[in-house]
Length: 100
Image (cartoon, rainbow, N blue to C red; front, side, top):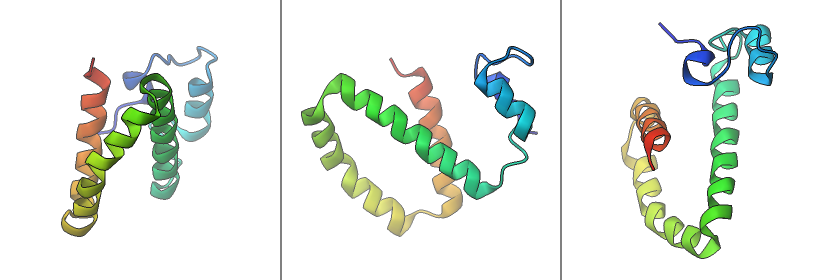
């Protein structure tokens, strides 16, 4: 069973926040959104978080990071199933949430 958005965020039902508005419109687990819509949201959130991190670490460090992950990304596209990619995304989100 999927957990509501408030389980993962500081959103509480009726708190008037934007996330609360989204829950009211699309359901507490965004069940009114299809897979493509959810993936687009995830992509945008990741891009926003990446931009914020690059602002902190600078472009030189981000260029080095790109050199590190480029071969990993190529390998993922060639050798990992879509189901495992989704599991990897879940693992990375969990790791990022608790990384110092």
